[in-house]
Length: 300
Image: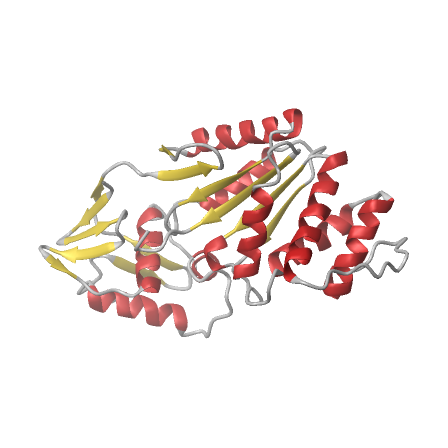
């Protein structure tokens, strides 16, 4: 069990509960995420932009949002900005968690489709496993979905970026964010992925062009391939639309391996998750690796 103890408080990272002695404290999800992030980055000052990106998922915030959350957290922890015991403010720099902590070993869950849950300590092990998944997908057509799951601040975003940087330049890889301000738009992460793929594709087969053209009739933001022929084969129902998305992605991987990375799928819309789930069932013998980061809810 991962329990962090600081002063008179205990934070359970498995159940996402904060207690003082034997008393369970009531804390909102955002202050809790903020506290966990500060604890995990206690060795440094964390600036507001980093907090906005990592704790608030990149959402647009009022100037008072983060200071207000810090203030609420201090009140709950009986901490003072003038004589801090737990959270220190560094003028024009950010915030730092300063209390002494004792805790059990970090746990980082990495799950892959078709395998049992695995738990690791240390980023090197996870990076090695991701690279092995990429090798199997690209060299042996053993596609799969890999889920990186853990609380805010544990390093999921950094890990996927280190993974992307470690990939061969010959392996197309794309990262899409599910927690941007427009994440409420159905399938927006997938649309952004196809936009990026289309921008970087030097040559498409006639079938791929037809797939893109059909999808662009439903989602004009995708854009059309340069040599689009004006196909009118747009699907008319949701099941056919999902099938067309799957066909489009599978056809892309038929000629060249692809790695698609989704950040913060816990914030994704239901259609994005449905497509991700359906596609994961169709890629066992393809050169496609899907990677997704996820923050479990307190009840998971």
